[in-house]
Length: 117
Image (cartoon, rainbow, N blue to C red; front, side, top):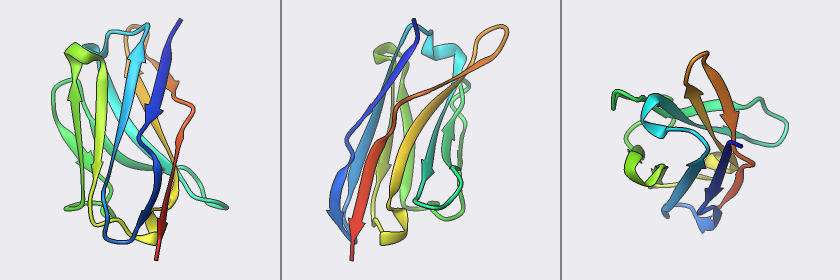
């Protein structure tokens, strides 16, 4: 059974930092692209960052230079380091895996990030 569990969310003041973690079980992380997404109230879920199985990274323009995605395949964990947080970053953050054959997507349950002004 596949499980993705996010942690590290919380309440932080604008300008602060948080590090989110997503630990996977039931999948081989090294063959999966891992993504972080977020969904703010009343808005659609959007891509934040991706770390591919080939160690390439992609970021949404809104977080470039502030967020860093990394992965530790030995620990089956992907991280999202978030610096210089802004109130607009307030959302539920989800991790998603994409990979295997045939390729399948799995989602975590999400972790709340709230940035106060």
